[in-house]
Length: 100
Image (cartoon, rainbow, N blue to C red):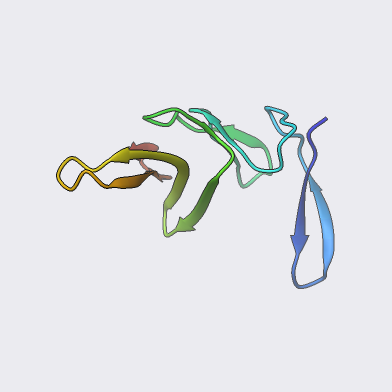
C-alpha cells in the first residue's frame, strides 16, 4: 500500500491522506506523464499528462499562484548555446493546461 502523510507544522501532528493512485517503492518520483494531485475534498485527481513524459527520481516542484512548476532530472542541449539545460514543465490549474 502507498500511504501518504502530511505534517501539520502548527500542531506538529501527522495526518494520513488517501492512498496513492500509483504505488511506488521510491520516496519521490515523477513517472512517465502521470501527475496526481489531492483536490479540496482530499481525493486524488488525475491531471492531464505532461507534454514530455519523464521517468526520473530527481525532481522538484513548487506551487506558485495557479501553477504547478515541475522540474525533472532530464536535460537537453540548448538550441543556440549547445549547453545542457534542465527540462521543466508548468501546469496551470484553472486552465488545466501544460506549458513546456
